[in-house]
Structures are given as structure tokens and as C-alpha cells.
Image 1 (spheres, rainbow, N blue to C red):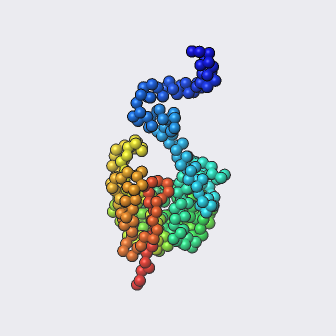
Image 2: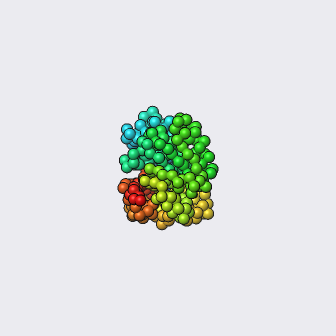
Image 3: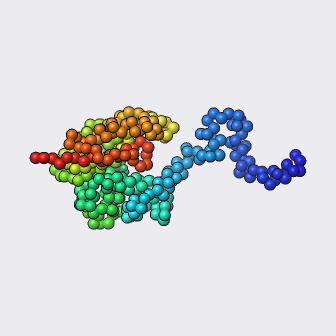
Length: 311
Ligand SMILES: C[S@@+](CC[C@H](N)C(=O)[O-])C[C@H]1O[C@@H](n2cnc3c(N)ncnc32)[C@H](O)[C@@H]1O
């Protein structure tokens, strides 16, 4: 090596980190074959984080991106929803405010609903509320008349405990927690301005979804649904980490069971008419708003309005 070359290596040569990368990843053998290099260890040192061990990084990147895109109205809805850090979510900070994906979705859901339904003074029924993020967001932003949650016993108990912790006592007092045993006597005898179902009809047996839709038809004036348009089998997404039996269960639940490429925007859009038709609670209902849901590519949201019953 000439003195000139040695000098160039000293001045511009690789750090110890890059010496290691070249020896371990961007090897002669790797360079000789382009097949697969963009989704293997070569590119994971060049342009992309390896998605397998970097799930939290990608979740936070998505959350950050969406958090920074919030418009002032939704930023304010988020800010008014206090105590969101209870339960230690994966969160990022945007403009000084902690942001997690759950509540990002909640403010977008509420935003979509609020364009069609007057929420101040509304009586709301939610079927399958999880820990209660949508209820928390609604009660923190609107002067609702009441909020009824119908769920399975264990989740209902979690929602009760969580919402008691995060809400002011006068907000919490507006919530009624009902089990499935209370539906036919209590819920069916009541009337609601809006029913909400987010990410749960697709996980119930088809007959149960039909029974719930009949309940909505009999008791509600509006219906908001936000659920997947279909099923998927792409093993690269999760390695079927919960086992084949769980995959099989997922494939048989819900009304919309066609397997699609959930990351193909047109494949998703093709399923929208079936989605709108499947979740229409009955003959007197009209779909008045329909759009992609945030943040998952294959979730759709629709808002239906019922013609008033003439007696
Ligand atoms: C995936 S979680 C979604 C929770 C919440 N909507 C959210 O998006 O955060 C599904 C919810 O549906 C509820 N669920 C499942 N089967 C149900 C049934 N047959 N009746 C009522 N709720 C049910 C679960 O207990 C859970 O609360």
C-alpha cells in the first residue's frame, strides 16, 4: 500500500463499527447475490431497521407520525382526555403531549362520529368497549346524557376499574356497565342516540353479530362501526405467533371472512360495499358516511342513520 493510500485509509476509512458491519453483513458473498438483500441483514445495516426485533420502534414511529399529523381539533380532544398514561402505554411526545396509538385512534373515531351526530346530550351504547378508551374520550369531550357499555364480564370489570381511575366522578357516574345477561331486559327496553362498535364484531360468531345488529335496529338512532373488511393469512406479519388454532378461530369469526391482502389499498376498497351492507342494521337504515379508519390499512368505518319509526 502506498503512503498516499495508507493516508487515505487513515483519514476516510471505516470506524470500528463499520469494519464490523462489513465483516458480518455486507460480505463478498452477500454482494454477489441481490436476491432478498432488501429484506435481510444486508439492508438492515443500510436502509431499514430489522422489523422482527424492532416492533416497538415501528409502533413508536407510526404513533409519532400520526401524532404530529393531528389537526388542532383532535389535538385538543386528546389533551382534554386526561390520565391517558394510566396503564403505561407505549407513547411518544408530540408538541409536549404524550400520545399513544389507542387514543390516537379514539380521537379519530370521535372526530368521524361528531361530523354526523350531535354528541352533547347524547345517550350512547357501546358494545365491546375493551378497557374503555372510546368512552373515556367521549366523556372527556362532550356533555353526554349517558354511556352504556355492554361487554363480557372480565373486560367489563377492567373497563369499570380503568374508567373509575381516569375519569372525574361526575363523568364516571354517567356510565352504566351491563353484562350480556342484561341485554334482553335492560338494554332492549332502552333507547339510544348512538351505538358504537369498534374492533369487536369481527371477533364474534356471525350469529352473535346478527343478534347485536337487530338490537341496534330496535334501540338506536345512529350506528358507528369500525372493523376489518376481511381476514388475512400473511404469516410474515406476525409469524402466526399465537399458533395455528388461534388463526383458525380468527378466520371463522365475524361476518366478513374473505381472505385478502390487507396491505393492498384496492383489495381493501373492493370489500367496502360488502362491509357497508353487512353492518347495516336493518331496512330503515342508511349509510351516511364511510371511510378508511386510522391506523390499520384494512379497517373501515361507517356511520348509519335510521329513519324514525312511524307508529
Ligand atoms: C379487540 S377488543 C376491542 C375493544 C375496544 N372496542 C377497542 O377498540 O379498544 C374486543 C372487545 O369486544 C368484547 N367482546 C367480545 N365478544 C363479545 C360479546 N359476545 N359481547 C360483548 N362484547 C364482546 C371484548 O370483551 C372486548 O371488549
